[in-house]
Length: 277
Image (cartoon, rainbow, N blue to C red; front, side, top):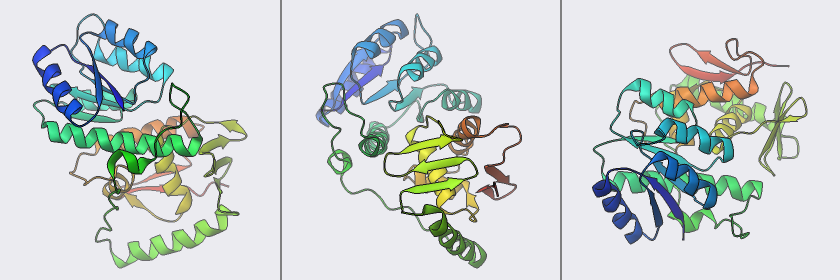
């Protein structure tokens, strides 16, 4: 049974979420404040964290920073703070998703399933195991059949660009397990990424974004396309998630993130892979 750490100081909201999620066969443990959350996280094997920002003793943002020092477990922020600055800060510190209060419990459940599914697929490919030493369950056991990305209505030029990009990618894959650009090498077999031989630690979403660019080096991706293909969800116009994950990825792979060479911005359209040699 997947175990979730729910960090929430509102006893009524915590009880409501716990009851609903346990009906959906999740095990839920509640931390009423930030200090308790940090202690419980270090001693527990959690598949996901639901984190409120406005909690006593230790702030939600500080809890998030401490979790990210220890783990890449999916973290979903659930907060009444709905300003762009708070969303950008939370996502920038490593949160995987952001839900604003008041919320629908069915939306929370859908986000939980999606994030656990992506994390499971990533861990299965990298060979990571759960705390009890058993392999993570197959993604299909988490949420059934995965929704296929939307195809979009791109122009003829975009479709032609995508076809060209796929053809070019065939030349970079070699034996089908390696993708590369410049000094960056991605191994699809063990889900590792190196730059000039040094390993780069990426989250599941960062890995999937980079993989899209490496597989289609000539394609320009809109933010809507990136969101639908990486998040496997309908794009509702919120650019923060895409922008922040691109920024985090640049910080990890670029020599100078302020002057990116690998992931370029195509103004008014989206992003593309740079012509790095």
